[in-house]
Length: 142
Image (tube, rainbow, N blue to C red; front, top):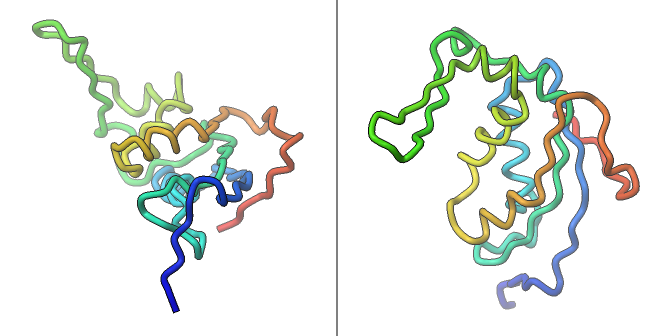
């Protein structure tokens, strides 16, 4: 018996909806990253992009446990001298919760061409409405 190897032509992609309301941000990000990567499929092949589409709803209602809201910082650099910008997660969750969720998921996906392609299949929304009803996504409970 030989080992099954998926290829790009045979991958079947499904759509999933994850409701982040009341759930820890990291737990939602782990589930989304696994689905984007395709690790939940029995035909997972590491060198083939066999992941699914993921829609994350209610990103503003995701919970950060402990004192992460006050202590955790989002840092970026402008590229200029002294250009380090820092934002507390309490501010980030109040103004741009979609970015906080995308950053968490991006950190869990490999920084390769497959990982970058997988992130294009991620859709994060602040509220409970999304525009992907035509794809008939199935709700994922965990």
